[in-house]
Length: 389
Length: 232
Image 1 (cartoon, rainbow over the protein chains, first blue to last red):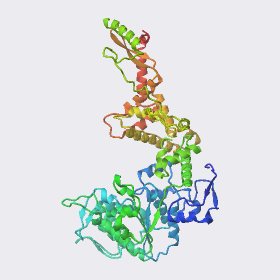
Image 2: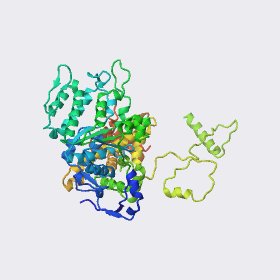
Image 3: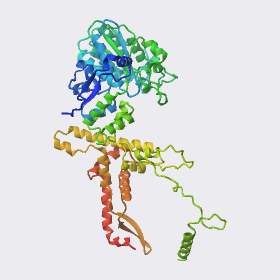
């Protein structure tokens, strides 16, 4: 059994968003205090998490990790942690609990709600997204993910002209990756549904009405020439299914501020391609502005998208510009802050348990104060500082 | 032989004139400015720092520059790792070598922690060493030789003689063995991964770096007939 640590932690919130600052200033909560005994919970179902479990770790079971997160969502840093510690566990924090609290009480007859996560670099936006995705999968939602939207701008693969509109450009290989990812995650939930109309891809090739959806997607994977059109067809089908109360949809886009930037893609005799000239971007923008029921969109602005010299700002108005804010309004902003004092202590307890911190000098109170100072309350820097320890 | 006599006269003259260094036109001594004369060792602990600031006296006009050192009282400091960094450095690029060695320690740690968590019984878990600094110190100690070959000229020809030497020299030779087995020209893999495997093997007394030490010991045994050439 893990060692029991008695520490007094106040119920006052540790973040810096609007909600937490209002709660902190209210006088009724200042007298209230709570004792935390361990840094772990055994509850692996995220629908049972509440504000009592804040500051504790929970482990995701291995089946969910391999099905949902392993292929396209986890970065090499997270895969190393999974391989080393032989488990994948996440810290429960306030922004994720706020979003899940809203999702439980939402009226799904109204059109699409849009969340926007923002925060400093390496503050933990991706881990809050994994927490919310795990919750939605436990409620049997359909997941549509774009793990890194700037890939469409930077990674140079084939570019082709669109058949239907001359001003737009197609990305066949990127859309094939999207379709494969979608199939693997949602295979069991889409088996029964069929298409509602016919879709014409060219003069000779078309898909009929009444085909199962999995056949449509596998057609797009094998014939890469029409992969981008299949993506557009799939998004329309999902909207129709959601409006008829058959599925619930979660759309996650990471790095949405890349939709209003220049790309690095090249084509012969074309000088510059802007992101608004790509069909994938236009298709997702139509989905975000539509009136579908039973759907939720979760976006995040990242400062990784900019150049190395331009990464100081992290506020969404500076990163997205006026066009982006006008497009996304009205949205719900959620700030992901850096670690507070109580969270730092529980993370260090977890590292000591998993043997990432071993030196006996580092386990004392002096050593912990030094690590806290050197990391600057940043989650990724905490990991980096403890490498030689 | 004629030069030797002149040498002794020169040295005796220096001994007379050492205390009074004159700058006249006829003097043969050069006036060398000793740049290490006015230097002061750096402040090395928190108590010394506090002792300096007790009285609010004005600072002297002559500023004394401390010597450069990487000493710090932080938890992450280790003297042998700093020595390794200084020997591996080229062209004064210290940040690059520091990043390489940070990656080396992380690679060692990742492998050992994985083995620790995969082991089921308590006895197997006690055998695995997860501290990267312990593995590092142990590998460097296993590569240090006991004797070193030194060329001594006797009767016009040079002989390689086995000789004892200082701890500092042995450390440097041991670290050089590790670096020169890993730093080859035809390498497609980053240096940090090659160093990590080499250090883990040296901790268990296997590998090429420890093999170089064994080769040196064999050559010392072969030349043991000339061991008395150490004393002239």
